[in-house]
Amino acid sequence: MSAIALISGRGRLPHLLADRLHAEGRALVLAELEGFESLSAARDDVLRFRLERLVPFLDKLQDLGVTRAVFAGGVHRPRLDPALIDPATMQLLPRIMKAMASGDDGTLREVIALMGEWGVEVVGAQDICPDLVAAPAIVGDVPPKAAEKQDAARGFEILRLMGAADLGQGCVVAQGQCLAVEALPGTDAMLAHLAALRTDGTALPQGGVFCKAPKPEQDRRIDLPALGPDTLEAVHRAGLRGIAFEAGGVLLIDRAEMVARANALGLFLWAREGA
Image (cartoon, rainbow, N blue to C red):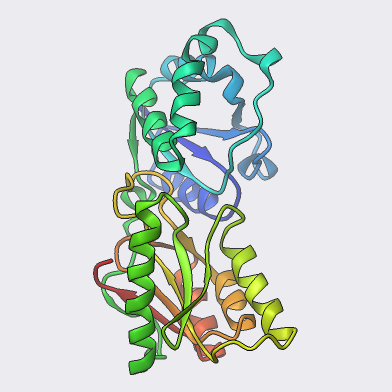
C-alpha cells in the first residue's frame, strides 16, 4: 500500500492535515525539517531530517512506500552546515543553490522536481482538505463597504506586481494608498509594524484593507498563503477594517473560529474572485 508523507513546518496547519489523514485511515509518514518543529512536540512518530542530508531522506521516503507528499506549515531557508552534507546530497548541491538563487518560487519548483525524481508526487494542502479554501463570498456577517472594495482592488493590483517580482503575498491599502507590503519577515511583522506606526501617532489614512493572494505564477501545490484567527487580531490592532483574499487561493485555518472572531471584532472577511 502506498503512503503519503506530510512534510511539516510550524503552525496549526500540519496538525489539521495529520488529523484529517489519520481520520481517513491513510498510510501516513510524518516528517519535519529540523529547526521547525511542530508535529514532534505532540507525537513520537515523526521522521526528522536536514537539508544537508536530503538524498538519504528521499531514499527513506522511497523505502517507506511514499508516493505522494504534502507540505504544510511555516519554514524559512535554514543555514546549511557543509560538514553535514553527505556525498549523494553534495552532487545535488549546485542544482539546489542555483534554484535558491532564483528566488522562492524557483526553490519550490526545484523541490517539487526532486520529489518527482524519487517517485513522489507533491499535492496541495487544499487537495487533502478542500474545506480549507473558500468559494467567492463574504465569509462572516460583516460586508466590505464600497471604499474598502476599491482598496481591495488596488491591493490586488499591487500583489500582481509583487508576485511578478517574486516578493510577498500580502499588502495593506487604505484610501488608495499602499501602507505596507509583506517581505521576508512575513505577515505578522508587517501588521505589527503598521500597528506600531499607528500607536506612535504617525499620520496614516484611517482604516484600510489587508489583501492576501498567491503569486500569479506560483505552483499552488506548495506555499499557498494562509490566514488564521491570530491574523484577525493583528489586523484589528493595525486599525484595519478587514481582509480581502483570493477565493480558492488562500488557506483558512480554523475557519469557524475565524468567522466568530471577525464578527466579534467587526472585521470583514471577503473571499474575492480572481486575483
